[in-house]
Length: 328
Ligand SMILES: Nc1ncnc2c1ncn2[C@@H]1O[C@H](COP(=O)(O)OP(=O)(O)O)[C@@H](O)[C@H]1O
Ligand SMILES: [Mg+2]
Image 1 (spheres, protein in one colour):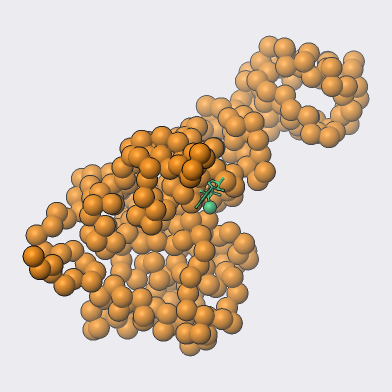
Image 2 (cartoon, helix red, strand yellow):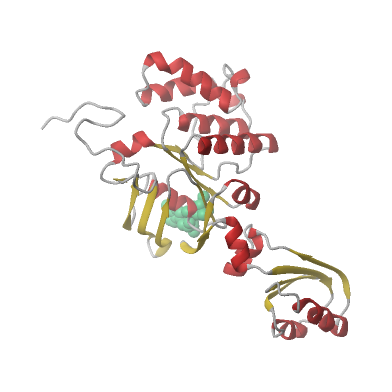
């Protein structure tokens, strides 16, 4: 039986992407490396048009998850569909609607920025009459027009990242995934990348990104999935996560004896107490009665040089849910 010779794009007669389906649907996704379970029964749906973040510390399974979404790695069990298309069994159709920016940026170092995009455009079967305009538009978007003829080997990490981003978008995919898009890039590139991601959303595309940067999750994401040890711990909007899991955070500079910690934990309205050197980190239910009681214990048991009461941020939520810092 002869196969149609289509290198990219959708082969005739095959089911097309279905816009009524979730952009990405993950069902019971598991990945086992030998005895180690890197992704553990992950189920979640990402709606079309969302910027969705996978937030987790290093080693939590973000890249492994995203590699299964793109079809780069096959799941031990579970399924992934993109706009209704199964990534394993309909990989060619998926390739046409998915744009990928991997954690490791693989560009042709000896080619110019323009030629890198030109090469990719050919690979994806972009019609020659559209190619020039699309490459020019892409370079503009990622703010590399003035460097279009420079070899990539002369680029900074941030510039390479931006070029990789542009490349992933050249075939105008509906769904884009970005693995740690701003890891190790300079502030200027970070801003450019954030702007670019927001532009994609404004165009109605779906963006899935992984990050362990709090500000990034906060600034960009409509919804977040917090993962740890390959497991889904919480999924919600950033605002909801904060209001659900944190009341108020009380940070105190003190030299309190450790036996006082148990007393603090037992106070009404106190949710968690953690001591890091001389910095005491307490999450309360936010009702206001806990703080005077905390101060009372501390002024009796130790000294209190500074006290700060603030709203919880995503780091606090993360700490509360997993018992560890995002950057650990
Ligand atoms: N090919 C592999 N073989 C064995 N273990 C792996 C492999 N890839 C990833 N892992 C392990 O799986 C866990 C999750 O890794 P990864 O998905 O890269 O995490 P993240 O992207 O969140 O930092 C880590 O403990 C990592 O060492
Ligand atoms: Mg990773």
